[in-house]
Image 1 (cartoon, rainbow, N blue to C red):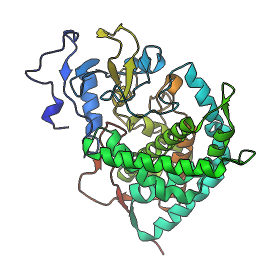
Image 2: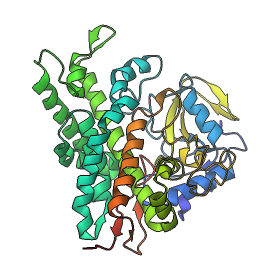
Image 3: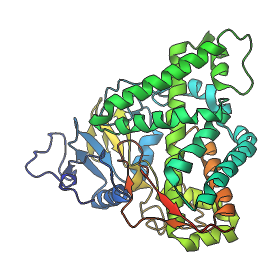
Length: 417
């Protein structure tokens, strides 16, 4: 990532608490760059040292390697989820249950867990397969598409809405809302107004949905919003404000993530025909391809936490209120942990990646995301077994301030009569 601002800052005095041996960098992770740039930067940082102090925003500590990042995830009593964006230690939004720490976190998570448990995901499997087959059948005769806009955004959104009991056609509303939100969430100040409008749109959608269900005596079958209206927390009704927080974060966490991973997975298959042909011949390896995508093409550049008490952590003197940033993209390619860490390895057996985080905040929708990605590969390859990237121009990805994702992925294939 050829950006002078990414190099250690000359002439900037190290903060008093930054010990020698903890270099200072100035790294802005918000710009859109050529695909792969952020992973290369993560590799450079990880191999240069296990910790840095980033002078971006108010300044925050970065930890680059697998063991340290996993340790941050596993100790919420030290590293609080009160803020998950290190350049925003006092966020104006509240993601529930994402920004709730244990032990209270488990109560909120239990409200939602059955909707995304393996049994629920298995039950949704046939509907997800039908949605995927319909979308692929619509796309295939054209001989090409923008995979991101026409498939990767649409498929997981329709499946997610179906799982929580909403019309799949409402994907027309949610897709642009999620896009606009993450443009601003990633640190791009020019997109803050669009982010705010997207949040307002989503929340109004849920306000209307709750009003429609409010006077119904029993919960609607398979309807998450209705379920939350009838649920209790510590023996008391949850209340609309909290329900709105929960439903909003589910949409944001559930839609953007899977579409992003699908983009990188299908770019890999388009540019690595040997892997693509192997999956066609050995479909039992598709699950391995999904896991390796989550490791090698992780969409999380890093994950922020707020320090809850003074502590020295791997040589860095952290104080209560400081922000830290676990460099997930560096951790997931750490050669101290993974054999052939810098390669996409089909059939990798030991793959305890951090693509879904770790610890009590491990991704609630991990089972659904895996199933959606697996179905996408299975159904696409049945109909479009050979495809290629249809441009020589560099592909751009959204910055790592939120979640990295390809902005576009033009694919092409031969159409047979």
